[in-house]
Image (cartoon, rainbow, N blue to C red; front, side, top):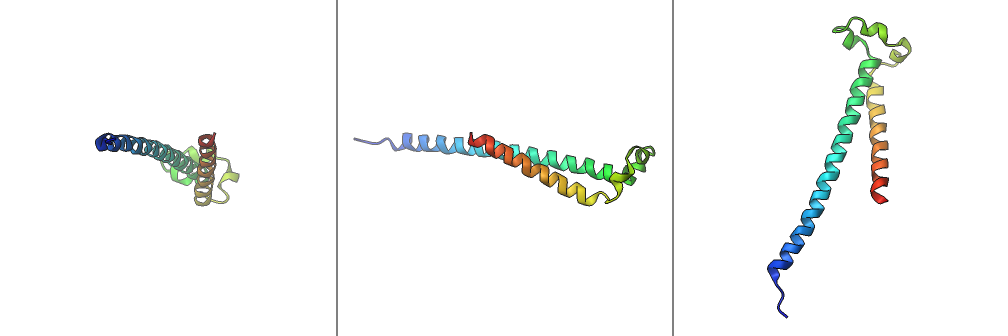
Length: 98
């Protein structure tokens, strides 16, 4: 008979602690993916809008092909990182299911 309440609470606490640790690891992975996608967006913006870096690096505007600058930097720098983030999320979600 007698149930050790303290041991039961400790076991429940360690299980919830393990779940919390796993959730924190997933959260850190998502944050890393978000930062990586954001960095890609920064690079895309500066490649498709060479005038910003040309003020610091005069040869930058000559390096970038003109056809990349036709639509500007804002739209590609938001759309492509978002797509990358979604794809990374899909792959990581599928790898967790296996």
